[in-house]
Amino acid sequence: MSIVQPEAARKFAKRGRSPLLEKSVVSWAMYDWANSAFATTIMAGFFPIFFKDFWSTGLPATQSTFWLGFGNSATALLVAIAAPLLGAVADRGGLSKRFLLIAASLGIAATAAMFWVNQGRWELALLLYVLAGTGFAAANVFYDGLLIPVSGKHDLDLVSGYGFSLGYLGGGALFAINVAMVQRPDWFGLEDAAQAVRFAFLSVAIWWAIFTLPLALNVDEPRPAGRQSVAAAVREGVAQLAHTFRELRELKTVALFLAAYWLYIDGVYTIIKMAVDYGATLGLARGDLILALLITQFVGFPSALFFGWIGGRIGAKTGILVALGVYCAATVNAYFMDTSAEFFRLAIAIGLVQGGVQSLSRSLFARLIPADKSMEYFGFYNMVGRFSAIIGPVLVGGVALIFDDSRLAMMSVLILLVSGAVLLTTVNVALGEKRALALQGRQLS
Image (cartoon, rainbow, N blue to C red; front, side, top):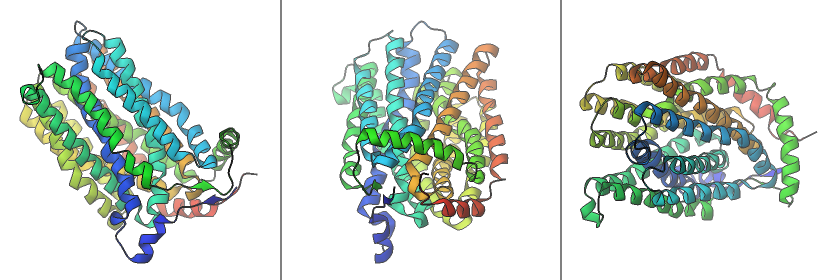
């Protein structure tokens, strides 16, 4: 079956315009603005604190850390199982945008429902968190897959970095408002900080829904040349998935990159999700932890865009290795951290490279895969990312529980970062691009 590629990615090249001014690119990147509110306010910010201090009142700190890690791992497992098949079905049926909107709707609804969860109901809060995180992560499978048709192969680094930079800015903007709500609830007509946090969850759902609309209205997607039912797309998707498993043997560079990515992104995601919990366990003030997250967001905005630009100059692989070096140094520093000032410096360091690792990993992977199977291959990409996210949080939570040492638990992340970086150095990008081009357009036999 042939695939009709959207023309938007080629129009700005013909006009000589910057891709960052194209409506479809801006609309695509605005989804990062939309869903980053969940990543920032919920995953990294208020949920870990509210879960520990409000919903899981009475649980020992190490147990609440364990259950938070378990929730993150459960989310990762659900998406990892479904991502490749959903990606294959989306490729065959032109369903990527529809699947994205369904998954985002699940995340939005579950996030809004957290508003009504009462104190002490940590089991219900954790269930909603898993459902919201599943919707968030599943939607990203299709969002990432739209990078190639939106940007074209020549602007992958820049457009990918643009999406992450808007994500940092949008997520940081709403998070700043939410922080003000929590610190001064009387300004917003709220009773106390606890009520403000619950309204913050509701505001994330509304923000996520509103800023998803540009993508829904303005972004085209690869679509089959002939119309087919969803059932037919599922049948062909299953067959294509089996074919792609065999095809991966010819794309050894892709498999090698995914192995490296599996290791280092595990460390990155674990730090993102567990940093606030770590700081809280060390006894740092809650207000300082929130401020550190804001610092990371607003430092990350220009840094992600810069890494997108620099990826086109020194190469995405080199840019990732530089960022991972900073992550390793920051992890070692975190072991010895005692004060809020040290936590702020750590936040600045992470903000400088966090978006760079994520955006350049996405654009590098896009170079290594056949463009006509972007959804399916990004299903594998997200499957690897989700499976890696199972190990990291459980590793940190398990070490904390067994050894009763949060510093040692955070230090364990260094193993993942270093081993992933070492494996990445063996990836031959030029050879991978050549093989992907040779396989592009190959039909199911």
